[in-house]
Image 1: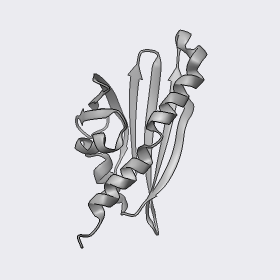
Image 2 (image 1 turned 180 degrees about the vertical axis):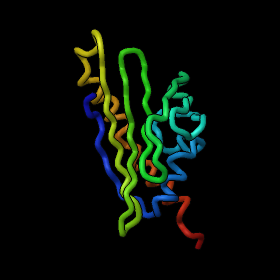
Image 3 (image 1 turned 180 degrees about the horizontal axis):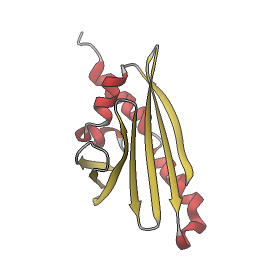
Length: 142
C-alpha cells in the first residue's frame, strides 16, 4: 500500500477522552468529511457500516488496541484503504496520528496518485476535526 495521509495533531485532552470520541461512531459525522452516519461494534474483526455521500459502505476493524490504536480497513472496488489512528500521551494531552495507506489495483492503478491525492484532500482534515470535537466536549463549563 502507499501512503495517502500521514497527519498528526495534538489534542488538549487525555488519551481516554480522545479514544472515547474516536470510537463513538455517533460522533463520526462531526469529524469525518462526507460521513453522515456510522454504526457497528468496536471490536476486532467487526464490520462497521458508514454512509458517505449517500452510499452505504463498510469497513472492518483490523486493529483495536484501546486506547492506543484503531485501524479500519475498507474496500471499494479496486481501492483498498487502511486508516490507522494512533494515540500517544504527551504533556499537552494526546498526539493523534492518522496514517492512511491506499492501494489501487487494476486499470485504476494508472490514476492511483490522483485517487490518493483526492483521499488526502478529503480526509486529511480528520485529525484536526477530531481535535475540535474532543476539545469542545472536554472544555470545562465556565
